[in-house]
Length: 138
Image (tube, rainbow, N blue to C red; front, side):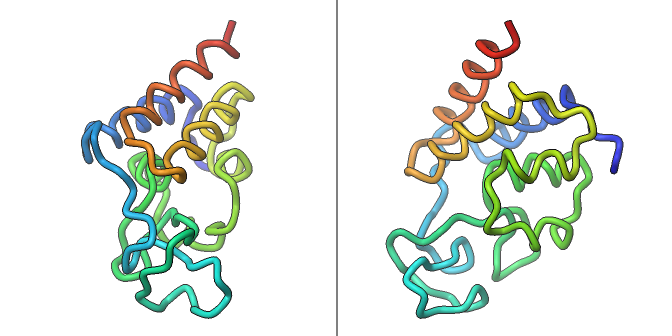
C-alpha cells in the first residue's frame, strides 16, 4: 500500500479538474478513451461506439483518461498499475491505493464517476464529489 492519504486524494481530484478544466467532458466513445460495451471490439481497438465504458488509462497513449485516473496518477499511481482495474468502479479501486480511504470519499467518488460517465462536465462531477463527501463527513 502506498502512502496516499484520503486528504491528498481529495486535493488531487480538484487538481485533476483544474488541469483539464471545469468544462471538460470525458470524450466517451472516442478513440483511445473507452472500451466498447457491444462485445465486438477489444480494449486496444480505436472505435467510436456510443455507450462505451470509460477508462482510468487511455488505450492509445500511456496517460490517464478519466477524472479518477488523473487524480490517482497525480498521487503517484502509475498508469500500468491502474490498467488491471479498468472494469472496476472507483469506490472499489480506491482502497487498493489509499490506505485510509474514508467511506465518504469512496461514496463521493462513486457519485462523481457516475456523473462523468453520464456526460456531465468535470466541474459538475467535482461539485458532486465535494457535496457528497461533506454530507457524509458530518
